[in-house]
Length: 514
Image (cartoon, rainbow, N blue to C red; front, side, top):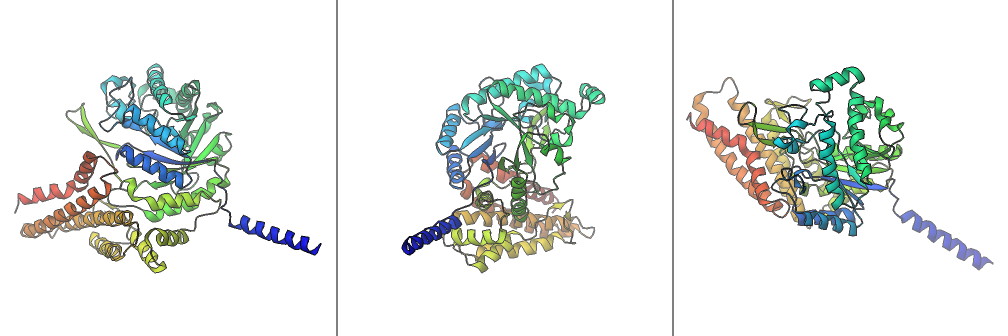
């Protein structure tokens, strides 16, 4: 009897030990990642490699914002020069499905449709004759015909039960005369929801479930319950108060399924700045909050740009080109934040940021605890923009002071010697090179915009600019080498040119006055 009792106690002890060591189950059935291909279009090999990376991190859903990279059959003006073939799209979806990843297509259908409305074929759908960002929601027949075509095409190549219809940031809502009249009669909420309901019904007729961003519904929630019951909302929150867009409780009480969405690339990130600390805190704070609120899914967003465009007009009424405002460093440089997200969704508890980074740096780069701390401090150094010559900081800083601290951080990164995964670590260095060059340029601007600046100083400034242009070329070579298998060559060339254009133009202007 004693022997049986001893065996039982040993068994219980082992069982408890196994349970204690088992990983916690994720509170989210949908564990997603959003891929934004508006700019910085990944090669198909890079897409598939990233899908494997996501699978290994426990991700089971990818939301593909194809935009102009999708080869729409009936609408040949929509695809851009980086568009994939239909065979590539089908192959990618099948590849992901074999990995256990559901691929949800995202088709913007209200705002953020410049790439469609810029074409004269769709000019009657515009809310504004010059701002091509948004369709008029009262052009019901034409809107319905267009998006029926697009959704039908996407449904033919994607096996997912979902289609994401976008619906965020409809800044022109109620802008034209027809819409203003309806808003006066029935309010903006009704104008928005009626149009979204039409889109949802198109998706449902295709046998799919509609998904949309939640920000505008939160802003104008009065008619939200008019949407089909199966609709899924994605509540995106990048570090702000829950009521940032509107009364959050109305969304929670609506009865619709909700997914949450933090970000690893978002405003004010750009070529020259990545707010690492902001994104780590967003992961730490919002993911457990979403779990506590009972959200069924979580989707990490990763924006390559702001979604706003700067038009180039060839005449008062004719646009020749549009350039994306605020480019961000490619997704190739953010493996650490992807891993932090994957770690955070395994548990309802907040991510231990310092503990995670220490562990990640030890495993990925072979760093000691002290080296990991130095690495993190360098990444977080001086995360401030410069706007109209002023450093956007609560402390009074000059561009030169910010440059000095950034140079010190860069020296730290070059002083660290990773013993493994060296190419991944190089991305941090080139990001810091790019930022250092940006601050060198702004230090020069600070000097020449001073009231004390004299024409006799121009030769010295030109020498500084020459040295900066050389440094930019070095950073470009570094950037190109790291991303040659990730982006297409023409994209890399454009990224380098746009990133450096201000310094080159200033050099040319001052050269005429020496």
